[in-house]
Image: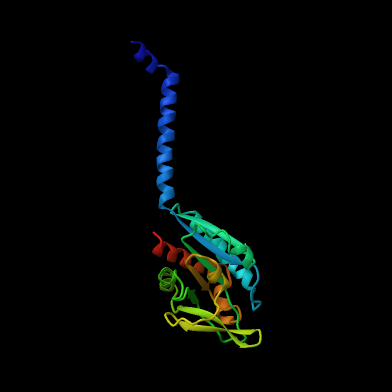
Length: 222
């Protein structure tokens, strides 16, 4: 009779319910955290001054992309901004790092969306290429390539863009060389090409690019 009386005590009932609630919450929380991917978004603080500023373009795209990822419980996001020295740390827990750029060129005719991946000298080549190709599917006409810096004269370098699987013994993006994770560098468009600037350097264009990147992440990490 004593045991039955204690169980009917309102305080005992409240404590039991609270314990069940906390236990269930912990189980749910633990399940969600195990299911998540951690996506690194790399945002540099200097860039090409063209018809628009590359840094402004990157920030517009990244802010929209990060908002979309944060709305999906499957993903955690690490955003690193600033100089390369400030950006390379903090990606240790990430599954992948997506570095954003909107390049410029001395030629106003240069155009296109380029997706640069770890070359086949990297331990992360296969995973980087897989994600790069997922991005390519969401951007019509885009190209998946390797990029290197080729010295053309003393302390003067030019891009050398080559097909994947044709790796060379040259320097590449610092973010790829210094981060021990799969890295994809996404060049959205050229800020020196008037057609591309008119198409993409606006609210609708930024939203389109961010949405396509988000869909690419969802396609590859789910």
